[in-house]
Length: 179
Image (cartoon, rainbow, N blue to C red):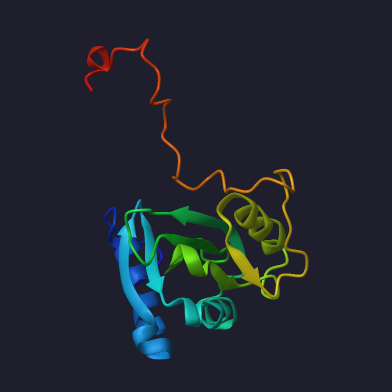
């Protein structure tokens, strides 16, 4: 395909998704448990046991070249029993301006993934933030401690463990708001 070919919206993302999925499946087989295109981003779901190897492959492989870690964030899905927590890595291939997301899921009572600070030094602060807000431990992190919350706080404020509104309020009529 020459560089002047017009690609319909979504076609470029589909091609990137298919190419990356093929490369990941060839290298890691059943460690790739799912994929989709969400908000124009190819997203790949991977087993936690292989997350570091997959991220290293995406960074070091000449065909992938995802050298920039744009975002690392924790996710909480309390209704997803056995896989309540996740970490999402957003990677960017700057020379070709390609972006993808990698997600890995795990149970709340085993909230640990390997650190990626050896791949991207900037992950240090991001991992500390997700430890602080979600309680996710990053095994091998050089300085894993709270970054914003007080040391003696005994909960993780970004987990969906608290109601959005005070259930004891009686001064509000929810029927006025369509609830």
